[in-house]
Amino acid sequence: MEREIALWMMEFSSMLQAGVDVRLAASTLRSSSAYVGVALSEAVLEQVERGQPLVQAFAEWVREMDWVGLAAAERAGAFAEGMQRVASRMMERVRWRRALVKQLAYPLILLCGTYGLFGFMMIAILPTLQKLAALTPGAAAHRGWTPTTLSGASLLIFTAGLVVVAVALLIKNRWPSAPIRPPFDRLIRRMRTERLADQLASQLEAGIGAWDAVAWIAGRRGGLGRQMRVVHDRVRRGASLCEAFASIGHVLDPLFLTLVEVGEITGEVADRLREGQRLMQWDVVHRLESIAQIAEPVAVAVMGLVVGVMVYSLMVPMYQAIARLS
Image (tube, rainbow, N blue to C red):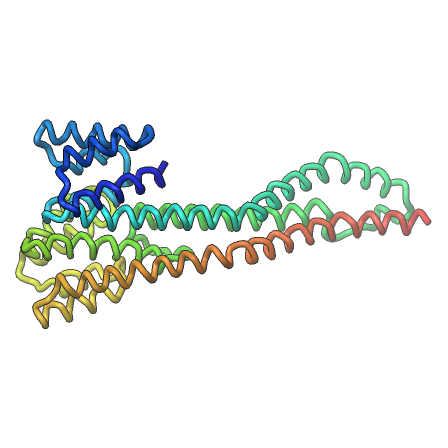
C-alpha cells in the first residue's frame, strides 16, 4: 500500500507544481486511481471543502515522521515540493524493503528449517541414539558436551542475538537518547537528522523565523519532539542555533551541526540545511542499497555456521555408537 500512496502523492504534487487547482487535481486522480488513490482524493477534497489544512487528509495514510514533514512543508507554503520529497523517501523505503526481503528470503527459509531440524532431532533422533548408546559397551563413560547441549546452545545464542538486536533498535527508535548503540545506529541517526533538516529548511526557506520553526517542531509528538523542546528552550534563552542543537548532538548527525554553524556564519542557514538534507538523503539511499547487497551473504554464512554445529553435534555421537557396535 505504501507504494500506491507514494505514487499518488508524486502525481498529485506534480500536478500542483504545474499550477493545477487542488480540486481539479484531486478529482482527476480520483477518477483514474485505484482504491487507495480514490480514498486519498476524497480525503483531500473533504479538507478543501472544510477549509482545513490539506495535511490532515494524510494523517491516517502515512507514517508520523512523513506526516510531520508534510505539515512543515504546508506551513512553509511549499506543500507540493514537500510532498514530492516525502513521496521520494517512501519509494526509497519500498525499494529497499523489497530488495532486503528478496535477499533475506533464503536465509529466513534456512532459519525456519534449522528450527525444524532441531525439533526433529529432539523428538525423533536423540531418543533413538540414547537407546542405541545404552546398549553399547562404555556408554556410561561418556562425558562432556551432548548433542542436545551443543546444538541447543548454538541455536539459543543465535536466537538471543536476533532478539537483542530487535529490542535495541526498538528502544533506540522510541528513546533516541537511550545509552545504547544498536547495529546501524549511525544510519538511523542520519535518517532522523535528514528529516529534521528537511523540516527546518522548508520553513526557513519560506521566511519563517528560526525560533518559530524550532517551536513548531518542538510541539510535535514523537520523533525528536522531546529533544527539540530542549533546543527551543535554549534558543528562547538567547543561545544560537548551533549552541542549541549542540546540546542534543548525541542524537544528531555531526554533519547537521557543522552545516548549522556554517549557515549562521554566512547567513544562509536554510540553503546549507537544504544542501545537507540532499546529501544525507543520497547517503542514506546508498547505504541502504549496500546493506541489501551484503545481507544475504552474511545471513547465509551465519546460518551455515549454526546448521554446521547442529549437524556435527548430531553425526559425531551417531558414528561413535556405530563404531562401538562394530
